Each structure stands twice: as C-alpha cells, then as structure tokens.
Amino acid sequence: MSRDKFSNYSSDEHYLNFHRLLGKKTYALDLDLIEYKYKNGKIEPVAAFEIKHGNLSVPIFTCPSLEIANYLMVEGKRIPTFLVVSFCEVALFPVPMFYVVPVNDEAKEILHKEYWFSAKNFSIFQHTLRGVSWDGEEEYKGQKLKDLSDENVKYALPVIKL
Image 1: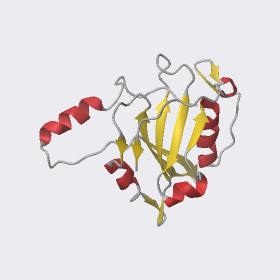
Image 2: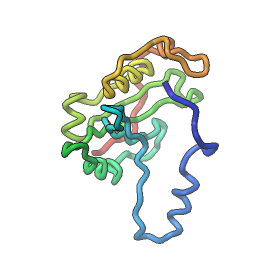
Image 3: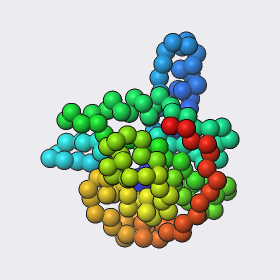
Image 4: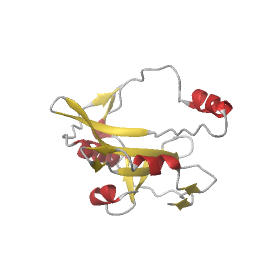
C-alpha cells in the first residue's frame, strides 16, 4: 500500500511548467512510476508505468516517456513498460479502476493483452511484479488492502494510439 508523501507538492507540475521556459529544444519528460524491488540488498527496477487520467478528452498517442522507458535496462534486459489509464478520481469515477496496456515485449510476457484491473487486483498485480506476497491486512491510514474495491467497472476510454 502507499506510503506518506515526502513532499508537500501535489506533483512536479511546478517544474514541468518552468522547464518550458528554458527553450523549445530542452527536451524532458516525466515518467510517472518505476516499480522496484530489493534483490540482494540492491534496488532492482521491475516495471515502468506511464499514468494517464481516465477523464482525458484528447487521444493518448505514443509519448516520449513510453519510448524512452524502452531504453531502461537492468542487467542488459529492458524493463517491462506499461501505460496505465487511471480512473481514481472518486468525484468522476465512484469505483476506482485501472486500464493497463503492455507497451513492450517484456510487458507482454507478463500481461498478454490490455486489461481492466479493480483497485484490489491492481495492488495484487504490483506486488506480483515485485515478487512479494500480497498481504490483505496491510493498511494505510486505516484502509486495509483486503478492503480495496474488487468491483469491476469499465469506463469509457480515451482514444489510445500506441
């Protein structure tokens, strides 16, 4: 389950907006998540995630962060890269859901096709990626993992062109 944030900022948007002032040829990207585990006392990335919000009104095209994630290697092997369309804003989506798209071949070995995950199943999926057991009794701010929604709802997807 999630831990407390280490920053008072809600996102990196303040820097991303500032970075645009540095010039049109100062390319940068914001890769949203890199899941990792500890192996022999060292950090080992296990998957890269680009997160998009489910209420987007514009198509999701291949974005540089997904392409660059394909260059992330661990011991000579690319790490699995996924696009995740998140439906977590309770005001818009009363049942949190995650639409996960495997982007590269390594991701397709884990998840063979696009898939809808309930909040509980997305938690289990992330634990599985790390090779750690899922403990339904684990909690964060009084919310136990076993009490996450297991309801499956399919929301309207933005257009995805990968």
